[in-house]
Image (cartoon, helix red, strand yellow):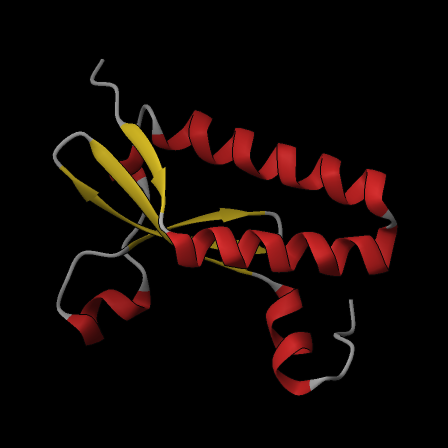
Length: 107
């Protein structure tokens, strides 16, 4: 089976850091650390082996490039695949709306 390398774009790293900060406020530092570990482990496990098995994201049509998405619980991981590399562009989750609006997001 073909193995892919997984790379996190700086924007995706910022998204994960923001999610971690949100998690620290909502659940506490320990649970937020566990969540980030689980998220990264799931991303790497899935995208090192079958990234092309993930569906195209709606943004793909608007941008004219094949952006794929992987859903992990309430998070949407947006990525591109080029040869043997899957590059994570963004990690979208409930914390985004809170940061942008300044209001808490209802679960």
